[in-house]
Image (cartoon, rainbow, N blue to C red; front, top):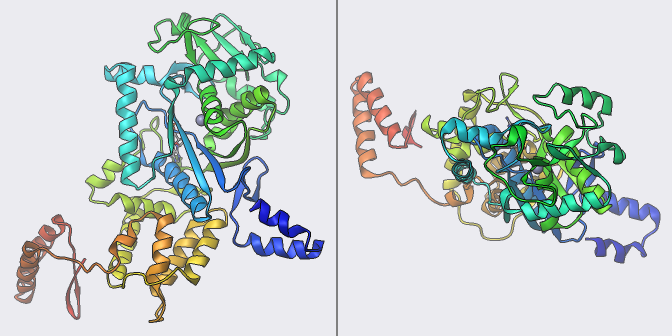
Length: 485
Ligand code: AMP
Ligand code: ZN
């Protein structure tokens, strides 16, 4: 992309370049960058390669559908990048050590606490919930990142980064920990745009404070297994003494180890802006002297009655809960697609039912289509334009429905659908030209129900309908007779 521009720049005057740029912008990917608080044309450092880093889960409890919203949106971003012909290297961490109860490095380690509560070892807890996480993301068709990096398997990288910071004079040591000295780093709050004074007040409200800490906003890079952490199970030797890494250092160390000093895109929930990502920028840029991330992409929450769905508020559902209630996990994925990633999304069972109906209707329509004959056309282009417009998936879904409702008999709708579904990830392409195969036992029940209805035995007809539903089918009574879904 860069070379195309460079090669062509000499041929045009400034006005023409502006017009050309505008024309190109309509089909180029644009993303909202939290760092600049504006939508910018996305350009990677070394096209067509893109380095994408996403903050992964802290594996001490069940993955809930709030988490899944965030990972579905990461997955959509990755799929949109691929649709724009980028070669994406996607790295995600697994936090299996060092994330304390408060994000500001205070209180107990979430993993150690989870292990005690469940009477398991920390290693067992980490393994159990990491597996649960991957099962959950698989159910909603999220592609596994190219590299999954466990914090406990990258202790050397984290120590090396702290050593770099030590050489440059950014750290100090207390009896309890090694801290990053925020006063040595200029413009520390550039991402959150908070004043340091406000941030300090927030931190003082946290659970447990190291009295030797010079400044409340300083954050831990390495905890020693002394005092409060004397019984901490996970521990490693380091040049400064035995202990374990703080949470923030793992993301800087692992992202830079796999993607280089400057990342194209880093994502995370909006809760990570004021502490975790602010600290990642400070420690990475202090160590390398280079810009850490070009594009910061932050996702908004899935909420319940206006409150963030979270483990601590106990207002969460897992994807298993949804399945137990009879929902296809992909209906949840469809629901996520109907809200923009920067907006809150209020979860209700009614909205999930609506998404489920919409997905079923889509499949119904597609079953009657012919296999694709050629390449994708105008609806796909319009869909991609919406996706490229800061991942406007609600608009893209509206274009999908335009395609569904298009009545031009010569239009190769399937070709467009196949491309759209590569981004949507709803498994729609599998339904093209596949009429519903109804097993003989279901057909028998449908006939029995029809007879019951004709003879006015509605109690029996309702009971049979329930039985049919249990087998995964639904009967809709239409003027042309029963319609099976
Ligand atoms: P955690 O495992 O708590 O570190 O969270 C992992 C990721 O999930 C973070 O990026 C959070 O921002 C995100 N997350 C947690 N709860 C929600 C929610 N209710 N809606 C959307 N994202 C969430
Ligand atoms: Zn992180």
